[in-house]
Image 1 (tube, rainbow, N blue to C red):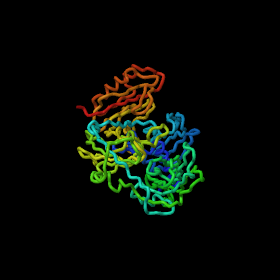
Image 2: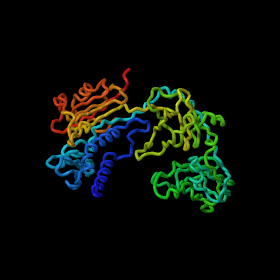
Image 3: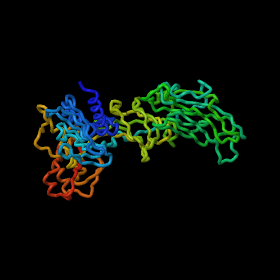
Image 4: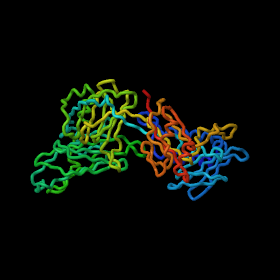
Length: 535
């Protein structure tokens, strides 16, 4: 039986391992099903390392924690009187690496990392010293698919008076009932000349306080603006100056959702849609429209006509694109991209909306939602190849905010750029060890740190895009030279790797030792290779 204290130690340990090994929530495969490294291989190596420790973890009778420094500790699982012992040394310092002495041996640990010692002596895995190769995703413009989309547009009908009347605007989840993202709200007001500001450069302000997720506003059929909340704060306030006219004015609000609640308590009490609607800046004061009487409609007219299908698209008259107005449908055709790689679409020039391929939705896009670096949080969106025909694939885009599809591109996706970054501090690969008769044994006499790379799908190395033995920095796809690099770095890597499916380059290769640019420092080897099928 495992007592509760040992169980708690193990659960805490595994939590630390997972959070220090995987600081983000990326899956081991990307959206196109391509293997994402080092995520996939590093997880595989972690599984192997824990397997080497399983006797100590499952049957060790003593589990303890020892402090080795202010932010350093070791968790030990062992069976006294036997060789069964496993240690997990942790450096919780988030800024600095540390050299830690444990049972008479020194171990180098990077910041915020854990080393696994299946025999309490030999490091086979460190959560930050990644021996597994890296890869980078490449987007390649398809020559076949981008010849000519022949885009056409149709502007969505904006309703001004709807049935299904109620005193207040309905709650948006209740209105849409998970059948659509969109819900219309309409109301009518009468304004006299004395209500409107006398100065021509002064306009009343339409203010809408919404519980989420987003909103487009139209006055007398004209688009006046859009607003949205965030993942953290769904509620937001839309506020725009609007040119009202003397007489009857129609206000149309299109509320939209970006999904249902995915977790948390009281999900049935999550609400969305406009709650308070007012007009500020009138001569007669603020006009509250919250209980003015509102008409409702779930969904767009184009959704009901199924404009995203070839049959449905024939129900309306399309024209050549012009001006990129808000709430517009675009249609076009393209041929399937060459090859068998995954396919994506890059939505350059668009704002926010949805995409259909041959009548099948591939989901929402949101190019106008920018990161702190003022770049779209996502530009490329996957198209399943199963949706495609060899020729004349029907594409429909619903653009909410206004955009121009002329720069939309069809891409193929690969992970044919493979990389390795290994330092002289790196432990040997965990794949070089096994347990025999309860003891940790090396499978090979050669336990030197190596940069090991393998091309996907039996492709071959066709180019060495970067190689540096010294102090390179960066990440796969963006490596750069440091202050010290061996002059023969690229030549050595080409010798070991060119034309091969896989290769391994030891860090103590004689060529590197003869051309050591900085013998006084511990060095790293960074490599970036390009893989392809040879013609």
